[in-house]
Length: 461
Image 1 (spheres, rainbow, N blue to C red):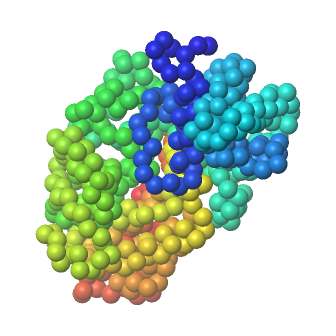
Image 2 (spheres, rainbow, N blue to C red; image 1 turned 135 degrees about the vertical axis):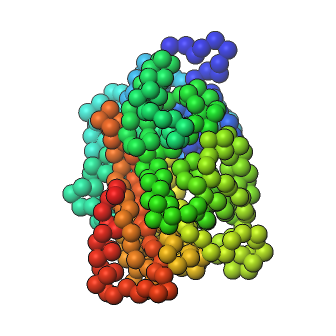
Image 3 (spheres, helix red, strand yellow; image 1 turned 90 degrees about the vertical axis):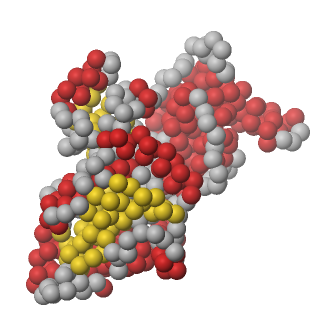
């Protein structure tokens, strides 16, 4: 199938996608530029085949190739398996892409010939031996697109249930949106999607999956701030803050400690009467958040103030014009992001055990720092988009053990990834914990704290 008239040849798209994949997988800093929808599609497909490309290339070659060449192979094998083009067309275009990248790598002409020949040989050998190619997918790294240490960590946490979790995280994530309270009836909204030629599936109290995925400007109600893109697991913050508002009984004073890119901040502002201080350490991320706030503010019942500073710098607090005590503190903590790899396949390849240990320590320090900002009777809400117990259950228990004036309140707890929108179930992997600070006039006994911990572990209360 030829490329559409006026668009770059497939080989150019493959080369661009391969270089972007290599950039992401290697953990290089900086942006990767804006790309066409065709390139973005190839990038995502190839990124999900990164583990397969490593296993297969090691089986057929003596050593691992350059990451950009490995990116070409990942994209090409994905395109062949998913029948994007006829296999021989994919091979020819991938070889042309290899020549293009070889020129950019530099070196004598024989280098270009060698790289192109290498890509050609591996792709054609795959086509000539489909049985061996099929066996490659049985390797855990290929099946679940993650390094062995990552897979072992999931197995250690979940045992026999690990396969189902890893399978869900290997599936392609859909486009999920959150409906604000301005959208009164989900059935009517689903009808609006039908009129646009789209399918909608309700997967949460406010969550709707849209198929096929479309650019945001094509989503009904997006420009008006009535809907926002947000995974259904992330939307449980709305229920938590609604419950807290009813318990506290007044407009909430809220600190969103790691606010950017703003999804949870805006969800809260569109759900409860509150005043939110949205804090982030990145000026660029905070600016993008402010730009998006101009869209959603028209459907908000709360106010948002934006502040840039480092939460762990005690001196920075004094220089800020913000409240010093809050009814609710949301810590959407830095984490491994192991629960969202179906959306960002590169995550598992950019982490290692030492990085996981470092981020767990940062979470601990942030929890302890922010606890001092919670008013008696208020709450600290701890959230990670992780499936690792170190960033969930273990972190929760450790905080309770060292914080005598904290007790758990009911929360969604551990949310495991699901991927079946047609059956009303689709979400990333998340963990929630709510810690209430005792009033000065009340102290908990060990029995009280044990009861509250058991009660707080109940999911989706």
